[in-house]
Image (cartoon, rainbow over all chains, first blue to last red; front, top):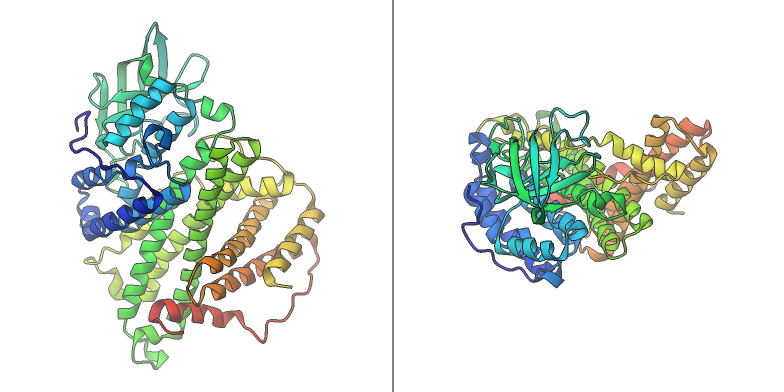
Length: 398
Length: 108
């Protein structure tokens, strides 16, 4: 992958256009989604089409030439793509996060420089997480400043998108433990992307490793990422809503398959019906999944509106509220995606497990992606506010 | 009173009874209940903008499930159980069929 996009990107101008483009792309991406999963075939051509569509630039603010769409729209776009192929839905996750963190913490000249690139079709990957650090929020990777340059050294994992990126935003801590992001060119000397992701789900995200061996960048390519959490900003909720949108998309996709295959199932012998779709328990089972999926979508949209408000009026209360509602979307999307992708088989019967359908990809993808951060702590986050009046901690997972 | 309002009220009286807790299991229990109540509220809001003829039934299911969840938590956390109104004339079990038959078979 070179450090420049192969195709120029279309400029999307409105929320409605973003939804329309995503709907069209999702239909195309759905066609070979199963084959890509089965063969672990990385979606190189699909990603070029995806970013050239303009969808990777829709959150660039209007003042910088973008559409500055609502986060209701962002969530809907990611949901639509993820219903077709959640690996493709997940890959722009960190790209969209970086566009926001630039908006929150970059200088004016950095914003102009990078937003122009985003609108031109440049893709950001990420080298944030580390498999060996003490916990998800700590980084052993170091950034050291020398005059007008900075040097990064370290080892990263779960680097979704890095393999396909033109620019790899990389987190490192300074001597005082403050997190900075260096926007490294994909072909920067000392930067290596390792394609070693072999998870059983989200198989084509290439969420493997990145090593950084004395990578040097000018200060103009470094942002003080910690500032996005030192003061109240919508950055945490923005990072989270994209996760919830991916899982909501998996739930939607799994339910569509459940209905399709349940319609084709044979009637059970004791039901005394002519067709599987007349089975009263199958009908009620679909009804149960359907209201849960619709409810999850409704909460996801609420979360998008809460983020829009936190962006327009950033303060302790609006940001806490966005975190709380996004946490609801996170819990419900994880729950619904896992439920729908499992019940799918119960309602469609044994023939639905045959290899040719590859329907297990929905559960494998749901189980894998919902592990990004544990839903069990979201119940706690919400309850601690409801019961004890404690606002959520501000970090990239809330 | 609607099931949603009753769920909200029961959650509030249970919260006032507990008042404060450092027990992570009690805290997360309230998180779960708040999600169930807000989920029902979001589905009720959705009815206004969504043309689906079963959208209201979906909101009713969510509210009924939220009320049952809150009522169980009330008993668990306060030792008391507020009696719920009878639903014999409008059984929850048939609502899943109504929603499923529409979305699976296009039948109302």
